[in-house]
Image (cartoon, rainbow, N blue to C red; front, side, top):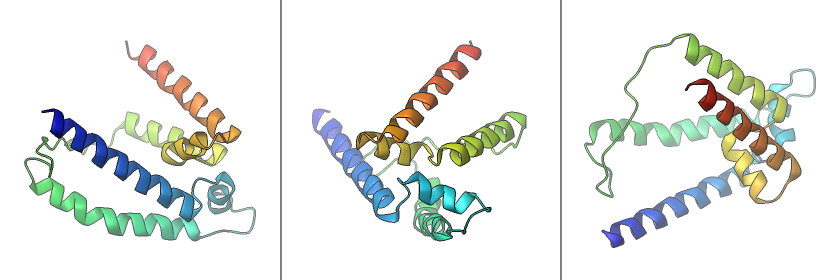
Length: 141
């Protein structure tokens, strides 16, 4: 069991490093780059569209394969979402996520990368995100 936990931790760490490296290389850990895509009042930067397109092209085959598997390559159960309902909660959450992304220039992944480099805007975004998550969890009880 310990070897499986170690392998899982190593695989998770490697995946996180590759993801973080990709965010840095693509410029998505820089909020100015994201705002350059979202703010149409300034010269538009379409590079985020290409990053997202590349991520979808790379991730889609993996998700299609994962839907067919009963367990992961590491032997863990596949726990993919099954709810396909679009409701008020989903739409409100998507709007709040988009507003936070547009205001801060970060979504959670790039914010963690920026915070790990001790960038003040990344640290502030992470703190605000944690406050929002806490408020949601308290509201839900």
